[in-house]
Length: 269
Image (cartoon, rainbow, N blue to C red; front, side, top):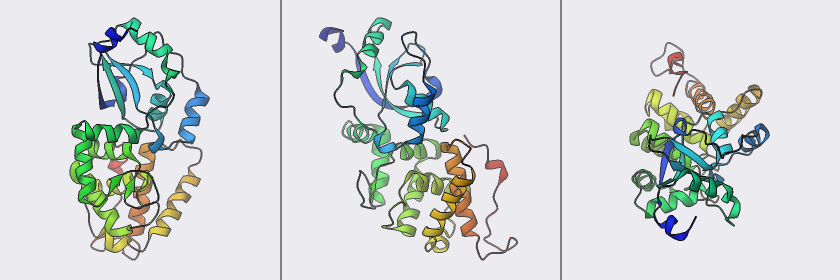
């Protein structure tokens, strides 16, 4: 692709629906072992954005990230952050695909998020404001205030809305401030699912001293379902169920305030 051809190509960074990604003839078939390896070592902070080419019918061809796309699908994700190229011919897409490994260093999800904030991306700015309002920021490191699970933040906001993300961060800050894993993706999506089902209830008061047992019980639930793929939907349901069980400790099933596990929530999107 010549420099003049590249100049005619527009690009933007957005969260796209995975079901809008369709195969292209120049792509390789995905390797099961590589997909499984991505799932086994999954870390949102290190997840590169997909590189896709937008088609006239609103679908996308993946130029870089087919294995990541398949892994995310298997883990239950419905969306992913992508760098979207427009104005490419099919031949130009194939040329980019062939040269996708020429870059020395790829950008991570954190890199794309930070760039999105600077570029005034609407989704990133909404997340940034909610984070700031609750004393958090996107970043790596052991500081409790740093959240690296960028894609989980994006999914909570896009699927549950601004208020649920705001309440989730508020509850985590008020319940488990400064505890090491309290802003991991499991805690984030699990608390968000709790908020979606039950609101804020007396969350902080009933769960404040139960951080260690929540971590232990969730680890046990993962061990018991070791034969299952640890999908995003599985994580949110399982972690939320642990929170509900610990919340209900000391309450009778007919007592006011007891939380019932609603079976009709099992098939969530």
